[in-house]
Image (cartoon, rainbow, N blue to C red; front, top):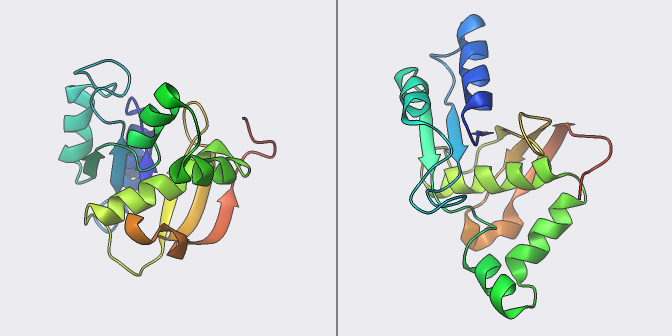
Length: 161
């Protein structure tokens, strides 16, 4: 499961899997921002890039992010902090990429794109590209605290807050 905003990281992952001859045996799920995340009615990943990724057998998941939904709107407009924000903050103590890895793995599981009860590799980054990878056994969002981060493969030494 890999996070990709514009498609740069997804393209790199697809091409790397093809070079290694692993594209047919890998269940690659690319998680993008939802439409309207940055600007109303738009998505940061072009249709050309989406087509490139899907044509190579990867699955594309575009939906509201697990920790960036209604709670963010309520916090922004009315103040306070809610459970999703607390979980996000705790995961960011490791790195932004760690938070995103948990988020995208749970989202992919909830969408039925990865199997329940199995470990997956999740890859994400801080501001662009990929700087974090974890082996994770995600749980569904309704039971988020059953998620298990089995291994932190890599992350930035100093998290960016």
